[in-house]
Picture: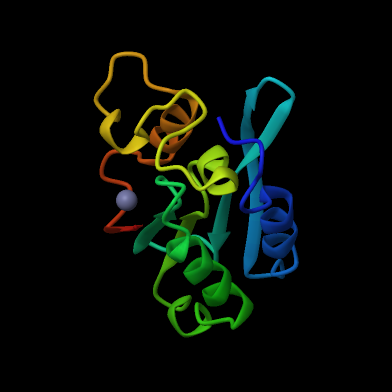
Length: 145
Ligand SMILES: [Zn+2]
């Protein structure tokens, strides 16, 4: 495994935190832990309760950071504001923190998370993501790769 990190997840968390306001709520669902690392797994909710709901997720493949950058830009530039009268938007900004830091498609167990949503006992990252994918809850989901 690589010892030289390509990106810093803590910096990403701080960047997201700086976008918080009355319309942007950030929740830590749980943590992804391995060896001496502990990554908060976050969910962001934009806007109040609304019957139309969208889910945007990113970073399931750690070597594809463009989606994460897109979410940061979407939040930092308040691009969501025009949609909050009609939509409640849930965001999973980075499903694979290890892959994000180390620029790997797979997680720390060398697993491709995007292939394991139907697994009997999926990795924690997938369990956390699946806990958000409530049946019939979202009208639209967008997975950024
Ligand atoms: Zn991908």
